[in-house]
Image (cartoon, rainbow, N blue to C red):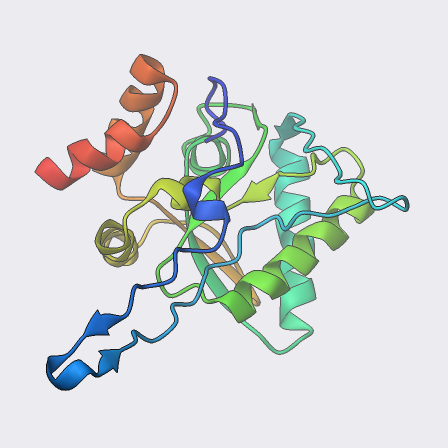
Length: 208
């Protein structure tokens, strides 16, 4: 989340294909096969070097000015392709850009239930281009890791509440970033302090 503590490993149930639904037996011996489900793309996507080896993720601290410049670059990249992407951020980016309680963060954790795969691929391209433009950025400086552990109904609810809360930590043509709901941000922070991960924060939110 960019607010301290170790990150979970990137290999997770949310990172790979979902199990294929089992066919359901219908009266008369007919099989009812469920429709395939779309697997959400993770940002950043895995990349390989010139030898085909998977590149290791590298995290680096980013100052407020560098973060703002990188986001402005991404916004321009997206806008030039006649697109507009809206996401929700939680953690260090909110603390650094909006609350200004921290001078640096090592990443921007984002999610958004209406953030589809076409937008994810475009954002992945933009953040990779920004990393090449600003070498001080880590390979995972913008990522959807927090969403990998977020149940679907919770994902939709948090996105809706964040937009209603209407606190924007960044806004330029091409890219808008809302702050996550304050109650969720608080429970996720407490969860990370107590357990080193955010899934407990998801559970607490559902009980509020």
